[in-house]
Length: 271
Image 1 (cartoon, helix red, strand yellow):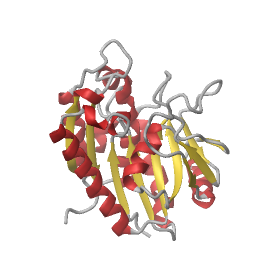
Image 2 (tube, helix red, strand yellow):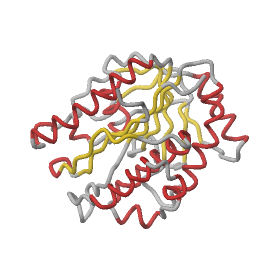
Image 3 (cartoon, rainbow, N blue to C red):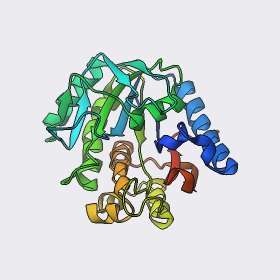
């Protein structure tokens, strides 16, 4: 069955924790963008959501892997009590987890896997907007965006291409959401800096389905736009899955109050 919905969006904690800090015009534009994607998501009636997300020292301590897929029946989050997202349990989908893990190994991507995985703002903020009732099964796939060495953009595009056959062959209605970015440098010396030129080029490559251009990013190029910008590795994976399909920009705003270039893109056709 073809993938029924795919989109990507930022997970800046300010979206929920201090939403009023942003200028009203920016906030309303971004909330409207997430609402557009939510309506598309609900109309697609997915059975399960593959969540391409980031790790923020919620699960990685002594062991750090490039990729880690959840292999659990439930996931709990958020871990942050201040996020203004109710703590809850999200149902997993062991069948899809197992199928993706097997496919990845067969394609030369030895994913780590976790029987217990905590969800932080990187997962719970987008889930709050996308499925506020938390009634869609979720398979989280974490990307190491924290510790060097990280997987390359090319490796992430390739992982998406490797996973695509299983996703499209599934009898389940599968949606995908990639979360993180865009440019930001949280807690670093350039905290608050937003590289709008980098963001514009990255989004434009998604719009053109320019997999070669996305895969060409080096770690240094991405980090130069801000340490948190590495979260876009998840978006590169989504682009690999979607192949020749072109992303549609729903909204982008450089929100100083949230110290992040906040963007939302969708692969659904505009109404």
